[in-house]
Image (cartoon, rainbow, N blue to C red; front, side, top):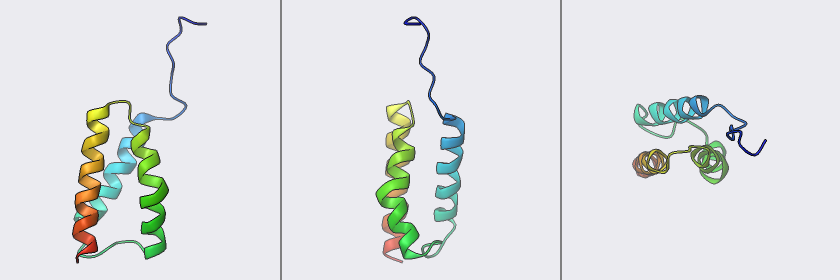
Length: 77
């Protein structure tokens, strides 16, 4: 069993799709598209957990930077 490749217990494509969906919603919004408690939960748990599941460090950094940029914009809206 030691030679078998490790497979993640989640679908990386679904993680990417969820992040893209959230980013799309943020990009098209003039203000936060979710209530404050949801935004807090996304910031504290959801986004970090999803980003951590991405196997490519550069892709993870890109998502992190894009989410942070949109969050700053929406915070200032």
